[in-house]
Structures are given as structure tokens and as C-alpha cells.
Image (tube, rainbow, N blue to C red):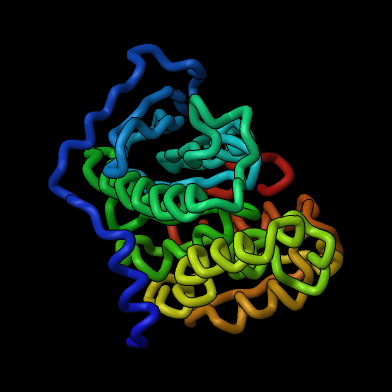
Length: 292
């Protein structure tokens, strides 16, 4: 185990015995024959509460479970349509908000290029680990069948989580790159926001964020299985960036490429559902008509 990875893991330690302090609305905001969807919060070890959606199938459990994470600048609401389809397919689904999507931060840029980015990145990983605690503690969840599904920023975060959280069976990392440093320092970022900082501020931010790069963690995901989906014409995650993440990842891993930009075609969604079905036991035929 290399020193950088060993030291990095320590950043995401927390008190797993601390109360989750779950507060769940009594009535679901979506209620149908297939599943019910609730709003809830749970305590963040870094302070405050983590807003989340919890979707619970109507079928008998214990069910597989899926932890979902949205993209940069989005919130949990962006993932709700996918969460609904996964719940209909038989999974308990938990979708959380990143710190930048929570009350008090929604009107600010998600990346500040200050020390706050490091603090919130660490906070999110710890909050996701607590989400695994929450799912594992539920009587209607099979703790041996929990997976992660993240898109863009959520995919990149998942690569980091995979290296520090060993209870998940599988990870779906969609249009992900190797971390925020890589994302803002590539050849395509010559005129990007990081270049607008004063040289001293830029170097300080890079030093703060370097240890959090997913590239240093995704190689320690095993024995969890990885699915990585990327677009050959991705305008936000160039193919070489995606390829570096793929190469760094541990086996078992499956890499799927699509002739698309950052928004992958519908077939990618169905491919991910089929792949997850093989690991979790969800029913693709109940996910959506076009994936049956």
C-alpha cells in the first residue's frame, strides 16, 4: 500500500458508532404500487445534516440497495428519475445532496477554488460512507448487495469512495475523470477558471486538492466490481482523462465507450442496468420498457 494512498485514507475516517439521527418525513412524496419515495436527512460527521431521497420498493425484502450521486452543479433531484426506475426494478435507493447542493450553498458556485473545496470533498466522502451505514442498518436491505451509481462529478467521487469504502459490491462510474485537479489542469483547460487565479492561489489550491484525486484511490477498489462508461467525444471529460482513470482502476472492471459527448445515449443507461442486474439481482424488465 503506497504512502500517498495510506495517508489519504485517514482523511475519511469517522465515528461509525455515532447516531445517524435520521429524520424521515412520515408521508411519501411519491407513492405508487411499485415503490414509495421519502425525504429524509441524517447527521453528517462533519456537522449539519445530509438531505436525501429514500425510495423503497413495495415488494418483499431484503432488497439490494443503490447509493446514487449527482453531477457538479446539480442536486439529488437530477437523479430522481433514475432512482425511481431502479426502485421499480427492486432496489432500495438512497440519493444524497453534495455539500454544494445543500441549503445555504445552492446559489453559490459549486467549486470555489479555495480551501472550502477540500473540506467539502472530504465531507462528501464521509457523508457517503455514512449513507452506507444507513442502508446497511435497514432491515429491508441486504447489506451484501449494495452498489454505487454516480454520474460526472458523482462518477469521479465514486472512484475515490471505491478506494476507502470496502462494503460495496459494485460501482457504476459514468463519464468520470480522475479528480478535480485533473479536471481543471488538462490541455483543454488553458482558459479555464483555475487559470484566472493568481499564481500563488492556484498553487495553493492544487496542493490542497492533490491528495484527493480519485486516480490514487480507484486502484484499491477490489474486490468491488467497476463499470466505467465514457463518451469518445466528451467535451467535459476528454478521452485521455477517462482513459487514465480506466487504467488506474483495479480489476474486475468493465469499460464501455460510446460515440457521444458528456451526455451518453440511452443505450448506456440500459447497459448499466443490465450490468447492475448481474451484481445486485434487480429486474431489468421492471426498470423501464426500453431496457426490458
